[in-house]
Image 1 (tube, rainbow, N blue to C red):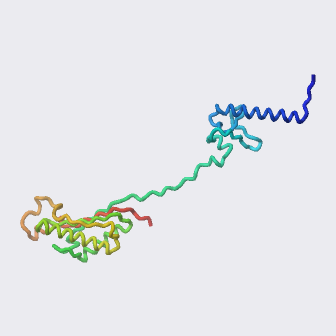
Image 2 (image 1 turned 120 degrees about the horizontal axis):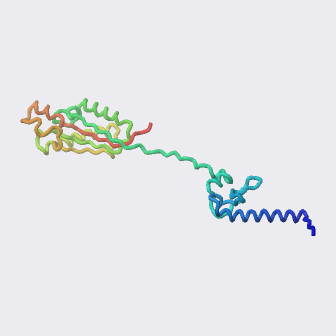
Image 3 (image 1 turned 45 degrees about the vertical axis):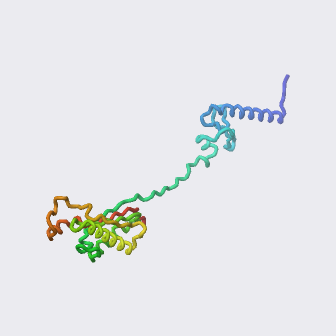
Length: 218
């Protein structure tokens, strides 16, 4: 017996065949390494319409390969955000000859002392100081208490001058250590007080300044 199909019946048959193909493609998508998110054809590649559109299964997020094919805008690499690193903290240590800053046995700044401190401020002009520590030292001549007091006075004088030149007072501290930390050895500069001994002990009379801060980008 010979059967004939009308156009309507033929169209219905084609639609059913396509639907079966899509369902079987969706079942095979479980075995595809990258097409779980999209319907695949018999070759297990992502199936597309004549307009290049894909059918999403809704079972998983698209992987990179299928995303590039079906949703290229989603496959673009994210914009790189420029990371601005903090400047690395640095330390500047300066030791001033106390005889340059002060007259012998005095705590008032000499003109040469002010010039030396101005040069120091120029050296740290490119820094944003976080802490500044000023430490005064004396030689062994005189009593312990006298030398302790003199070292504190000299450190305080330097601190006040730096603040007067614009250094923020919150981060600066001053202290004196008297004759407790000499630079000269115990066997050096022996004998009673004399011009020779005073000259020999000169390295012990000093003011140390330590600055910790970050470079300023200008």
